[in-house]
Length: 82
Image (cartoon, rainbow, N blue to C red; front, side, top):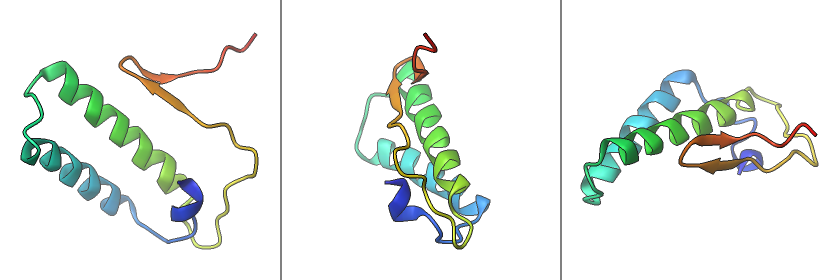
């Protein structure tokens, strides 16, 4: 997914607007108005947008072999540093 968005030149404002639209879509889809659900959805999308925007500048590339992040209700799951 990052490679699809890399190098597109998107600006920070686009990320904020995307999160707003995503949350409106949750309303439009009549997802439960559960505060924990909504907070988790928002947190995930804000994190995902930040991640995508890191690779947004023109000529940016995503390093090959980058780990696939995992998200849970508690947020981003960090790999065990073990």
